[in-house]
Image (cartoon, helix red, strand yellow):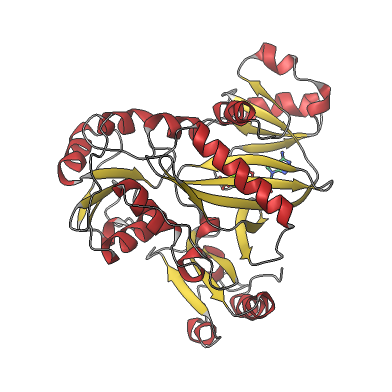
Length: 389
Ligand code: ATP
Ligand code: MG
């Protein structure tokens, strides 16, 4: 594994695997700080590829593409957690790669991820690994009702089946093709939250404040971050848990840790993402250091300073659904009216085609109080056609 001997200063080239919206916002931030950027993504119109100095249009397993990325970039990160670990390992032999292949491999696999939570002593949902018919037959009855989740490649609630009985579980395992899965006990959730931590190669950790998240149909819809969005002791526990998960992985980079708060007040870790996360987007406008700047700093070996949130914030996700009227005809959301509301910050990802459920952008709302941020966010939601929260 290649490591940095000195910080990579502006003027160097930072590379990212993946050309989605997270890559695009990383590229924007890196460029604002004076870096050159390189994106590897096969899609010629990928959101990040469109705005990067270099765009290598190959798949993640293309040896020539990876070699080209290593040639132009001084360090490499990822914006997509399902990048093959082999690609990260190949790049890691040539250039500093953060997060490292081993940490990404843990985040890619729910069974490994949960074993890591257990090792770190951070409570997670009771679960069983199902890779064989014998393991399916041996599932303890008290894990039902539960959620069967494919161990790999799930996102936005995809690859998940809710099951009540052993018969439904067996049918669900068939329906996902009997691939490796975990069955998680269905927990009584009071709320969901997440924490972004950034950890440097020297082990220094900083974090963003704890985000309270509302999901709809398995997709993040709203994130609220302000004092009082969550009891202080829970917020402290979530930050401590996130830091111990990052430290246990010897993680370098930005890591998002998602948690459930149960109805009895217990905090339970759900999953990790080895990159900036949708729930951290408010930091672009509400914090003095955003999650994307943290990504730049960690991969470049620059110092980490504790970010400070200067404004209470609400983030609304802008899904492709908002580009369609009730009768199914296309429409443009009323941007001018939304931007007439004070403290609204529009982020669109440059995707040409809106599709239901597709992440097209987000709207950050900042204000001088949590009440004011919420009030403006509710007005914006009404204009957009997003249900109140
Ligand atoms: P992401 O887009 O965050 O990667 P994902 O597809 O990986 O999503 P999860 O985060 O595992 O999926 O689950 C999606 C949502 O389903 C959670 O945010 C939560 O609302 C609900 N959920 C998941 N697991 C459980 C559980 N064990 N008990 C209750 N609800 C759950
Ligand atoms: Mg999730």
